[in-house]
Length: 134
Image (cartoon, rainbow, N blue to C red):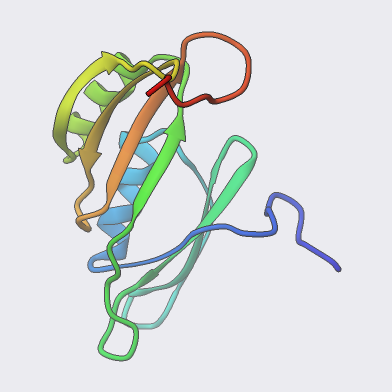
C-alpha cells in the first residue's frame, strides 16, 4: 500500500459551502497550514489540502452532487484556551466552556462556519486516553 507523504491511512475530506472562507477558518481559527489549493475557472475550490501537525485533511466546495456533510472532529492543541479564542475570532461559535475533563483533557467545543463541531483539546498529562471510572 502506498500513502502520500503527509497523509494517514484514514483522514477527513470535508465538503463545505464557501470552501474558500472555510479554508480561512481552518488556517486562522484552528492553526492549519494550507498546503495546496486547486480552484476551477469559477474560483470554486475543487480540492485543497490542509495540514494539522501529522494529519492532512482535504476540503472541496459543496455542490448539488456532493452536498455539505456535518461531522465532529477532535483536535489536540498546546493551549486549549488560546486555541478557542483564536477559533472564535475567526468565525467559530463556542459550544461549551473550556474545562478540565475527567479523562485528562482540557477541552471545549466550537462550531465552524460549515456547521461542524471541533472539540479543541489540550492533553493535561502524558499517557493513554482513559475513560473515568463509572
